[in-house]
Image 1 (cartoon, helix red, strand yellow):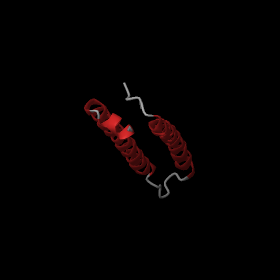
Image 2 (tube, one colour):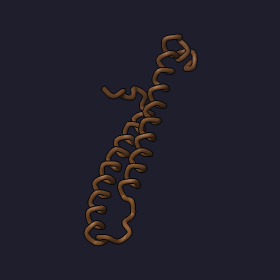
Image 3 (spheres, one colour):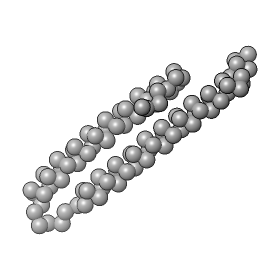
Image 4 (cartoon, helix red, strand yellow):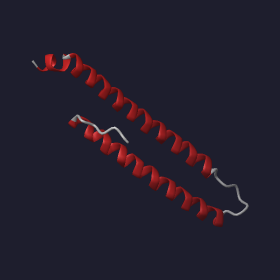
Amino acid sequence: GPIKPSDPDLHWTEWALDRLRDIVDLEIRTMRATVREHEQILRGAEMPDFPLMQSRLARSVRLSIAMTERIRRDYLLRKQERIASGEQERRRQ
């Protein structure tokens, strides 16, 4: 399952990722509707390459989500290492 943030500061990251996923879903649905609409209006005219635009946007957003999740995972691993080594407690003193 997904890694749940244990640090309160990371709750925002999880919230932001959820919102980003919602935005991507909405964008894809909107783009599909726009393509259908334009196909009806522009039959035979020079059509913008909506599928290419959509795939580039989706790939960019997926990369952003993956990078954010990787940063969060690396942060949690470093924090666990600090706790295991006792460094976390020394920082609090």
